[in-house]
Length: 392
Image (cartoon, rainbow, N blue to C red):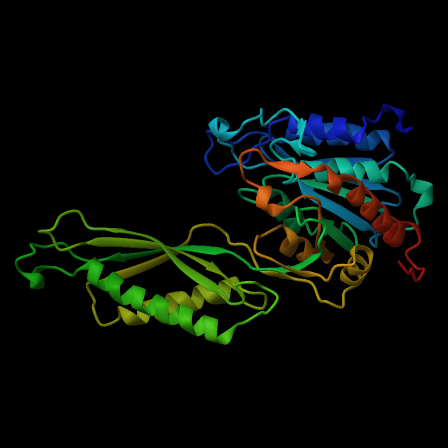
């Protein structure tokens, strides 16, 4: 049955050869369907039942199940099919051609995270449906690097995928059970223009923004005093003043000023509550000037923070199998959305995040065999003999 399946290196080569950039700029955005159909063919060869679900035009998710698809207690191996855009002039190799040198596989998506699919399939090829007491699911999503529309579609559908999930983002095979969230906000102050020789003729949006910025810094200090998590290298929530623009001429009272901020909340902090608090506090500082108005708008839907309990089964088993304590990541993933679907979720995969989103992205070859072996042990533990007390 497995004779039609390419070897692991060939699978990685074929995945990298199919561009699947996702980007908020339509000029760079590409379909992921070639990757989805490639994975579907390989998984069907292994006996998986494959579902391809359209998410939006030219974008789809894949849900492939080996074993009883009606059983909700299996293991999900999850990843995203897209990559970030690339700067071709900064690459020393073709980003869409697997290049092996220096004991590394180079190519766009080699670490983040197309190789994970090949390694998961390489582990899964040793099993058939009759071997499994609980199903094995391989999930491939669309547009994680931009809109996260793929995993959000699963949440909207209340998709029941399994009981445990491992997202194969590059963590150098270290278990990650927690990461910060992301929210970005546009804050606009509108005033009234007038001749600069007479301040009473207008209301300065720049001066209003000065009050807003002062309040933002006070809010940041309060958040950092209130919330701490020692798992993170930066163990407090951050608030970054990323940009500011306003006015048009020195001799005009400024009628418009905008700043854009980035907040990275810790687990336990709710994005909607943070937004409401932010708006309330900023409105209060401008309440005394009726000619100034405030508008606060999220720049995107936001990524919730993620945390799986240290006592969760997926965490304890992964720590035992890797010999590494579960820790925190500075980057965001689809994990909070899989958690919303009731999956006990962990982030753990081959390669380093330091190589992700970089020219000459690579996966070190010494990660290949340990990843396949680790995935095999996870399948054994959660799908083959899920009710046996294993000791590794």
